[in-house]
Length: 398
Image 1 (tube, rainbow, N blue to C red):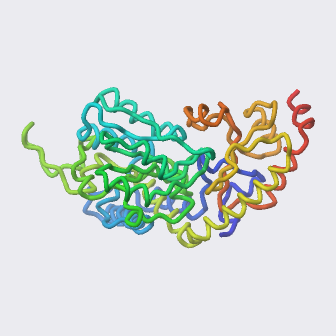
Image 2: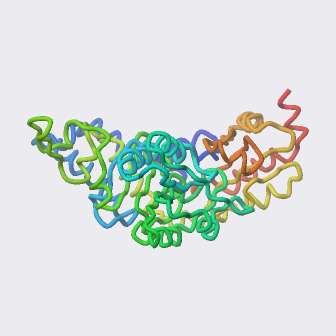
Image 3: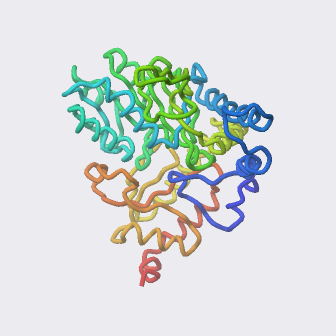
């Protein structure tokens, strides 16, 4: 990886809010630009050269996603607008028709809103019950705690592979094995994992996986819904329209296309998919194993430095990702973010869309550093130096 690949890095900004979105390499920007300047056309509709090139690029991106997460078939890859969209489609398009009153959906208090609210809505409309798996002292999901939460009525387990505040990596392979032994579906929110660690959905054996392009150096507005073929094929399309039907003559004579097209109604996000394909190329050239190893080393370096500062309370001391959530004693989290911004340092402050987690960690808001492979040790040093002197922070707040 060359930092020169990222135009935003030339602006002198230290960007440590990668859990929210990531910066884009020039190869992704140029790939999107080429669609708009060299071969703009719709997908799956034209019999002329530039339209056929669009088809090749768009479907080629699907093939890249399939390989990137090791899906069994390209038909198991559905393009959406992002993780939120994918999780809502899963809840409403599949489970709305497969859960009965009092069936249980198991999640945790550390989930992002996008992996909570769709299940709340489903519980309200279907009469299902949302339950929370107990977390351990580090706010982690353990297989033993999950087993204790399972009842004969449990039908769905929906978990982030890596959570966006605690940053723990859940033991999904073991969870999926146990769940399937009890005829329980497993839904995975991959928003914070797919960009940072190697993913193999066949090895994990999850039933569904949702993730976003913008969190992995791709454009905004594009995401992926992976599902096992037989489950996607049983899913009710949430949108109907052009592109996804074979024919329709009357109310009773509507025939849909095969997967994945039947779940992608209307003009797709062509430039988004093409840009995502370019982002996957970029990440693959670096190697996801290399990215994961570097982020862990940099996170450990940052943690060890911050831990020496007595007025900093680190919420997630043990983390399997590049996420560090902390507070500065006696200072509001947002004030820390504003203070660091004066020095061109971008961090996230707030509840990070995990609004139930406050009950677990005892803090409504935190400051979050989220590291990516283009961050450096020198950047961490600058952040730590600015946080060492509490009086300096307080004086600059005046």
